[in-house]
Length: 608
Image (cartoon, rainbow, N blue to C red; front, top):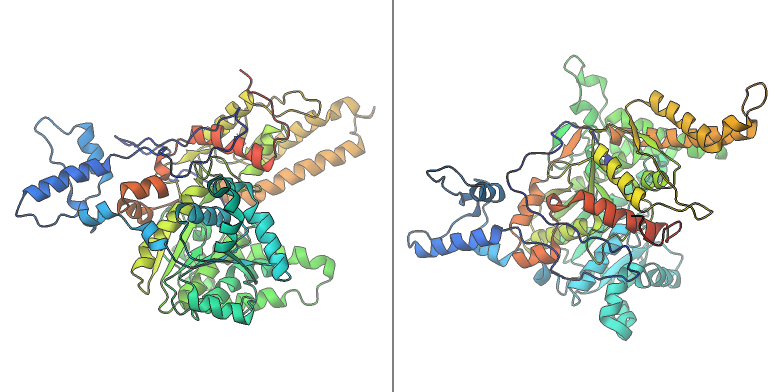
């Protein structure tokens, strides 16, 4: 899931010192996959050396038995603070952290915790779950069994999906290189395909296998979701809301469960504006009520009752003609979402799923991670891996192919995006942090960039133009497709007018107009269809391209602060360190072209 947004915060927050940690550049001319593994591509951020020096001072001072990281403040020198002093104060927060220096040296203990642990992962053949599975197996090969819930007719079909969609996937090439001839045996010794479906009350598990999992599993990761913005209400609520409650019901049967982790989205915050904090939902929370203006009576907005919504989604299909059901259920989902303060069916049903989990969890420790727009890998297992069209990718590809030369978006808005491998690293850090000493609470983590490292939409448009200007797509005749600078529009009226002009020009309608000045009916139909498709896409994305929220990630930053230098190297997720120009031009778009477009329409070498 992903989104694009408006500028309620400064576009480029001023920083005196900024850590540079660029993603590895994509090697355009190479046809080989360069596995990163645990390579030394991430630069250190300088904090550890400060802490080590402070630790020496503590040891030298017999009166200081222990020192909190939050108290490491550099005293101003008589001549004023140097930039190094300010950098230290920026990197080490004052008066917040209660983590000791000993803990900072040891880190969280991610690898140590994960060893021997048994996982149960839903949505296991999805984009993010596969990156998670690959990372676990590559960095912690002595992990226990990983039970993968797979929707299939039977065990044989589930095994076939495991092999074709996971074991034989390009994403796992680094593991193939590591294990060689024993790769298949290694993977089958760790991965256990489980036939099931979160939409079923007992998640569809075979009785004997369900008993095994409930006795053995340590960690449950719920990555199952329907992420279509305008999905049918009954379909979305079945997976995103009811599915979450079914899995929590199953979690309560697990005898040695240490943690339940829910993969959500930062956009469950709906139409909230400004800086949005990492807070859980309670049952019945209603964002529309939060946003009420003073003269509006709260009673004018009904309470959100999830049980009523589940019944409504089920019963609204009755009496409808089969040909009308799909459209009616899509409209119902958008109507209910916007009534209660969410922009679409996807984020509304995910928010209700979070509410169900929080309401049902009892003594089970819960972590909810809320990534923003998850895009291609920045570094691991290799840069640019992607599967399917993510949120912004249809626009990126259509622009490169000359099919879309503008879009409806606030030029100063922010695209909140985060690479998939950083989301996975943060996920594993939270699992270890909260699974090591389980407490019956709920912890929320925003994995997002809009506050700490905003990518402005007009800057993104420039990056896209620069990339396609040097590495254009080829048309059917093998000629380079030259694209103009992308035009950004604030109103649907202006965008629509641009679409018509562009469509007419591309289809050369003016040259084939009849003597009466009317357009060829066939070409006008083609033109109209093209315009309507682009307008529909813009309507769906508009709540995101003009989004006024910014996702605070204080919890996520504090998690990074307690990681050791070695953990930061292997499990780093510092979104502030991303060089967006390098990532977009040299990692993400080349990754899309290779893994989604499968190399179609690519030049053999960049145009100088």
